[in-house]
Amino acid sequence: EIVLTQSPGTLSLSPGERATLSCRASQSVSSSYLAWYQQKPGQAPRLLIYGASSRATGIPDRFSGSGSGTDFTLTISRLEPEDFAVYYCQQYGSSSWTFGQGTKVEIK
Amino acid sequence: EVQLVESGGGLVQPGGSLRLSCAASGFTFSSYWMSWVRQAPGKGLEWVANIKQDGSEKYYVDSVKGRFTISRDNAKNSLYLQMNSLRAEDTAVYYCARVVVVAATPRSYYYYMDVWGKGTTVTVSS
Image (cartoon, rainbow over all chains, first blue to last red):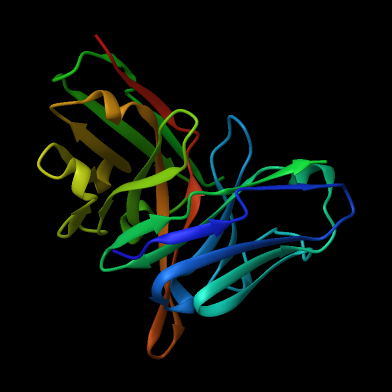
């Protein structure tokens, strides 16, 4: 089973700053199988990025994804107040899915 | 509007059973793989089970194999999760999600969950 490790656990930033979130896989992951989700308290997850770098419908272009192999990154270029949330990476493999443990982006 | 609405959650004693439902609308339900994902209180997301469009393939996380059964009724646009022999560690919000499998290149596919319900809460406690 592929394990996804996200870092940092918590990121304390101010609105307008750049956020860089990391997702590291225990073995190589196909880029097309890597997705990122945003979750706010009391809400369901929301798809942000699929295929490691493709933005989902309606996602602002301040969100971008990159990476390949075992290292993937979600970047939020300029944090808006509504971006403070928990972010999860996810990978598909062998007919199953695994999620990272999440990175919380909080207001500094 | 594309929508998924879960129901059936509640309080159940350890060892008990519960059946969750997910009603789909706004899209051709029978064209999509579907999943259940859960989230324990204060914890992260955990995939639980997948089912193919026609129900012919089903996959489960190891911790629920032999206890949970995923199923679907395409005529009713509904997804189900039968949960037996429930344990305290099954306490969570359970989400149903639509799975997208589309060609990325002639030799690879995108896999992701693009629509999620709001979830239903299952509490296993005596």
